[in-house]
Amino acid sequence: MKLKVGILGATGMVGQRFIEQLKGHPWFEIEALFASERSAGKKYSDAASWYLTSRIPSDVSEMVIEKIDTKVIDRCNLDLIFSAIPSDIARRVEGSFAEYIPVFSNTATYRMEDDVPLVIPEVNPDHLELIKIQKENRGWNGFIVTNPNCTSIGLVIPLKPILDELGISWVNVATMQALSGAGYAGVPSMAIVDNVIPFIRNEEEKAELEGLKILGKLKENRIEFADFYISASCNRVMVRDGHTEAVFVKTKRDFSTDRVKEVFSEFKGEPQRLRLPTAPERPIVVMDKEDRPQPLFDRDLGAGMSVSVGRIRRKRKKLLTFICLSHNTIRGAAGASILNAELAREKKLI
Ligand code: NAP
Image (cartoon, rainbow, N blue to C red):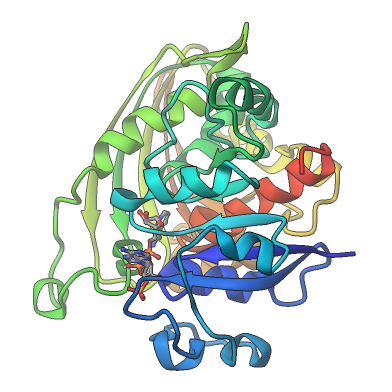
C-alpha cells in the first residue's frame, strides 16, 4: 500500500514540483495539500499560479487546500509530510507536524541543528542515524530530515568524489542562480530583465556552511564538520530554472583532468545501489563539449536529478576548476526531499 503524504507550501515553486514529481510515484500518494490562509479552502487549480510546463495532475487540480493544522494528519491518515514553506514559519509548523509523523523539509530553519540530518542520499546517507537522537532529544513520534539549499546540493555532489579521491584544502564558488530559486513572487521583472544581481540574501552563508556539515563525519552521535573552507559569491541571473556554478577547488593531491572525469563519471551512491525510484542512473554527468553545461539544455538530465559538470580544467598544480549545473527545484528541492524519504523508507525509518 502507498504511503499517504501531505505537502506544506503546495502552491509554491517547490510545492508545484512536489506535485509533479509525485505523480504516479510507486510508494507515495498525495492525500493533503496545505498553503497559507490566502489559499486555504480553495480548489488547488484556483489557488496556484502553476508555472510548470506540465499540466496540473487532474486529481490534484480538484483537491481543496487545507489550512495548516495537525488535525489533518488523523483525518487524512497521513504517513509523512513534505515541506516547502517559508523559513520564518517553519520552526513552529514543521515542529508541530514532526511531533506526530516524519517531515522531509526544504526549509533552512532546522538544517544546521545538531540533531537534524542534512542529507544528500548519494553523499551522507549514514547521517540519517541522527533521527534516533533527535527523537530522544525532542520527544517526537516523528522527526525532521532536511535537504540542503539548492546551491549547496549542486556543489556538494561533485565535491564528494573529489574529497574522497584528492582531498580538499579550500573551495571557491561563484553562482549564477535561476529565478525560480527566489519563489513565485521572487524577483520583480524590472529588476532582472537585462540584468545580473550580485546579491542573494543569506545564500552565501548557506553555501559556505551546509556543505561542511554534509561532507562531515558522524562520530559519537554528532557531525564533525569537514575541515576545509568554502567561500561563495552568489548571483541571480535571468534563467527560469537551473543553477550554474563556477567552482575552484584547491586539492590536497595533484591530478590529471582525465582522472577527475573518470572519478565524476563513476560516482554512485546508495540511491543507485538501492535503485530508489527517484535516483538518477548517473548522479554526475560529465559533459565534454567546451560550452556545456547550459541550463536551457542540460538542467533536465536524469529527470532533473543529475548534476552536469563540464569545463573540467587543471589550472595549475592541485588547482581544479569546473562548471556544474543542477535543477534547483528538482535536485535542489522537491526531488531531493523525495529521495530522502525513499531512502528513509528503504532503511525502515518510516
Ligand atoms: P514560494 O513559491 O514563495 O511558495 C511558498 C509556499 O508557502 C506557498 O505555497 C505559500 O502559500 C506558502 N505559505 C506562505 N506563507 C505561508 C503561511 N504563513 N502559512 C502557510 N503557508 C504559507 O516559495 P518556494 O520557492 O516554493 O520555497 C519554499 C521553501 O523552500 C522556502 O523555505 C525556500 O527557501 C525553500 N527552497 C526553495 C528552493 C527553490 O529553488 N525555489 C530550493 C530549495 C529550498 P500561498 O500560495 O497560499 O501564499
